[in-house]
Image (cartoon, rainbow, N blue to C red):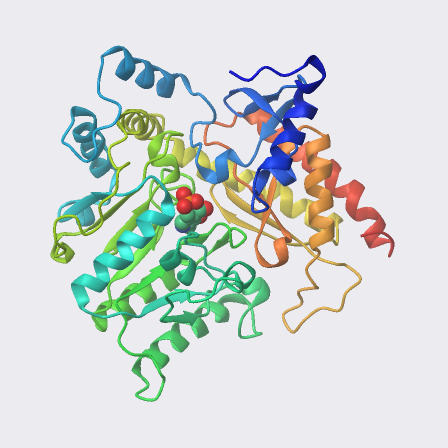
Length: 458
Ligand SMILES: Cc1ncc(COP(=O)(O)O)c(C=O)c1O
């Protein structure tokens, strides 16, 4: 083990060394210069002894917060029982239990004919698997994906992802992707806003696909998020999701729903597709299903199971601990009704944030579903667009994120121009913690945005 001189240990030294040695692509470590050493529930403790309420939850991974007792117990039981921790994709009791438990959470119409494929342990690998599965099944290449979408960073998933800045430097992304407008009433792609935004989005998709000169060769699949997470907590209306199901079904286009971030109760239903009642052809799952350990799967209709053995293989597809921790998490969320709790707590948080919007003109929009909430910041002095939305305020958003951290609150940004504060507390957040989050956030917002409203500052 490396030993460092006394002046080289401690949080400042750890931060400096990691900053100097890690890649320029490091992400959260830039926004949150803290060194977590302990965590429990919603609270992270830094090496300097400071405590933070974690409203990022591993980008939506920690349904039960950090180190929940049921997760720790499952991990300890598995280790103490001597189970092999790595087994490629061999059959194990832990995999069997996980699959049984996961299928029991799925809408019946889907679970009855479902197959599961265990992927490399990241959401992006499961997205790749879903795309390959549908390309194999249909013999087609193209993909329908949406503005604002986030599906991951590997080449196929990146092609489906919408963020231009991360795509632009990468030459040769395999991309036969047709980009369709996602309903985002606040910054409506059609410039009309309101419910018309979703109606026009559906009409546009349908007409484009049917236009013999629309330029779209019949695609292998459509991929969609029911609530865009990294895209700024933008929920799609249920009726629009049903339209996407109808449009794809009528044209023989498999529908993949990416539930990597929305799954396991986060949006107020166990799976976000339950809100609209649609039955997709495939669902991509990761993050919370592993109970804080890496795990990713796709679940899909058996009719599509036409690929060859080894078609999407990978070394780390048999993570016994993640399956045990995931089973414990899925059961706990079900048993404790945490999806329902996410719905009611989320509604309360949105109501209070909406009230704050009436006071602070720098808050342009408050939206979300369950505990996936976005607060979009704008420049109150900027001119409104056709829908009344003022220009995005990325510098103010970054300043609010820093002001939150100063107040012991971890909140990350997302959405267009990184101007949306995204609140993703664990589903086990207590009422007291909700109040503390909102108080700290309101305080940070007031401090940063008051000078803006007065025409000064960021
Ligand atoms: C909807 C969605 N899909 C895919 C991914 C990619 O998952 P991962 O970061 O585990 O590769 C993410 C990550 O945030 C996501 O939110």
